[in-house]
Image 1 (cartoon, rainbow, N blue to C red):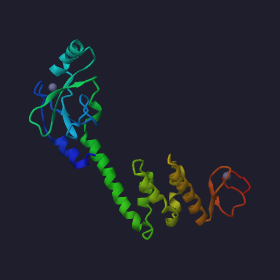
Image 2: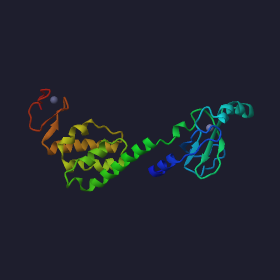
Image 3: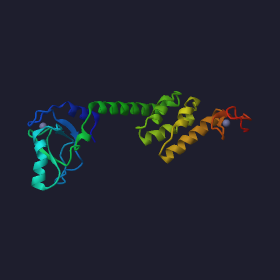
Length: 218
Ligand SMILES: [Zn+2]
Ligand SMILES: [Zn+2]
């Protein structure tokens, strides 16, 4: 896997297409070499994605005539090789989805660094009465399942009723995590002498005889 620093380094490299002088786009290499099944020997290749590039424009006819199938050529080179080559592509979209975008990489890296920071704080958050790392992880869609499981186990220990609405609005696809979320809600409510009204699901005091929201006898 490419890390963010490597990705950003590749994004800064400047190579130009010898056929059309367009700056080559850094693209993640496909997991296998389409022709011979061998690896590319590099994580990133630089590709001319200019649709006006002469070998690309002429390539469709040439491949049709020579091989009888649809395709064309894109110029590509690797960072550590002096010369590039023309590479066969099956359609116009080939490689356009794998272009490395520094902004996307930096945003993903920032999110990841924040998750790491929160994970570190999990060890002390109960002592510090600090709900932030726990809810940060639980509300971050991209946080790892393992970290979410770890964070959700701390909810009852933190016993902070202020997270109850956010917690009730969550829903996880993972069954184990969903069980922990529901147990945490029940546990926090119980420890704060509250419960959910079985009719309207609003939170009411444990001792209430009637729900103040819907009027149901409890
Ligand atoms: Zn070109
Ligand atoms: Zn009610």
